[in-house]
Length: 387
Image 1 (cartoon, rainbow, N blue to C red):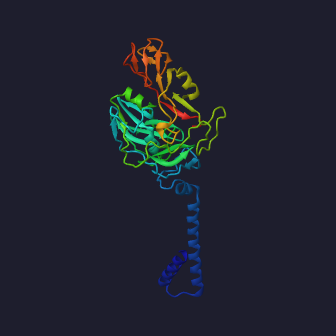
Image 2: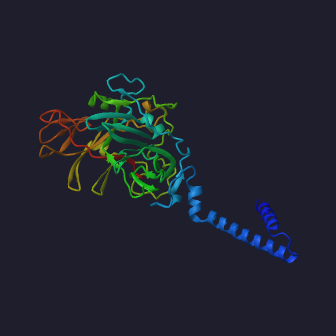
């Protein structure tokens, strides 16, 4: 290519200058070759600079501003499918919980979310194929997310500084955790924390909304007027089939994880995690599944951690409906009507010591003086230990 450019420039110079001596011709060709060599060197230096490598090769298909980031881009790993290879749901459709949803068995796990009195259930047999649902409940834009590799089911509000954002699956992982991206700026976000890690939105963090994993039957009983995400997603997927058969075996190792393990626990052991005012606590399933309820306090907030029978694992058997039991969890503020309650398990329900009211897994009193009252839910997670 450069040889052709040199010939064209030579012809131009000859036409402009006209007759010239042999020495002048050689000098002209030397100057042209020298200048073009400088240009070539400049192009190569720019192309091989670290910033150019980051922009061109590390984030193919993205327009992300990689000059702004809080991580080393080498921490980003391909998750297999590329950008939007796992399609997020943007126009979710729902069916009434009152209907007999035959494709969803009673014990199958759902993410239960209530916003301003409106309840919705997002079956994990659907989320395992899409990982995100951009939804709107009671005029609140929400983002329902699930990372199968970490078992992180987290709901965010997708309004930032008064502006609504929509999110997709980047196709990348960081420490085995889902990396999301917003379609407005193509910034990258860590699902486990809700923080922007690369792009113009660095420094921003999504607000978390309380949600819990319970069984479809528990959701239907607690919220008879609730809605259930439909299989009519616009995509053809084998809903009900688990593409990660046996992944949550406690003896397994997480896929694609490049961090260090805490030798005190198995990396695939599940924990109920709670963060309040930058104080973090984790409660192993091995303990909560036995005790059923833990009365605790985090940063001056008295909390109750509930763990009842109910939901199946979504990462065990080839078909979710035949997976082993995992249980349903919830975390709540124990303060209600100027009382601080303490709870004990009563079978698959919970009873407070102060009024002997009986409460279900969603934190609602169903029998006793507090019947009809609702405990304030606290955002929590059900994560693998390595997360």
